[in-house]
Image (cartoon, rainbow, N blue to C red; front, top):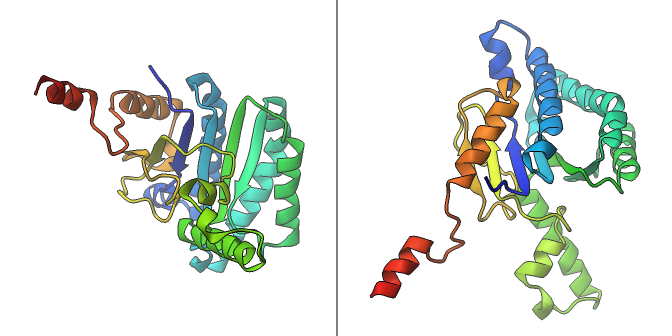
Length: 243
């Protein structure tokens, strides 16, 4: 089975998982962190080299302050508790998203995680934090426009490839597979540029219930698909050749 090198996951359904069990939403988020730990540990053995997870969107600030505070606390806890294990396991941590306006202690933790693990090669874990696909594209456009205004860049030199190279995901291949849990059937502003040709798998399970078996099933689904990138598939080419 051919595994995608880069898998991206929208980790959805923590709150509904908790509600179904009569538990507070924080319990669902805590269970979601444990599901993330298991997924990170399983990924290299399944042939995955890059794993991107949607941890906190730029729209999540609109949630109740208490829940936002809980989510920030869980992020800090995850990095403080898990960074040593991630580093020992050869996991490189990359953060994508807008860091402007984040609390200084959170920015410091994110930078520490990236710096400590920068030379690791077993798996690259990309955490999308305070991230939105549209926001990323706008920030990138502004950055390139500023370079043009300063005379450092010719506007005619801006191509799809150079634009991609200026995104938060610079140096990271586009995800071949995007997985979303909880049964929702949308991307929710996640990797809008990078996922242009990604295969999409939507699972009915809530994120805290996501397991290695769910990941393996999604990879098998991916392996059975034919990726065309706007061209003809193998069967279509054969029919065309026959006239």
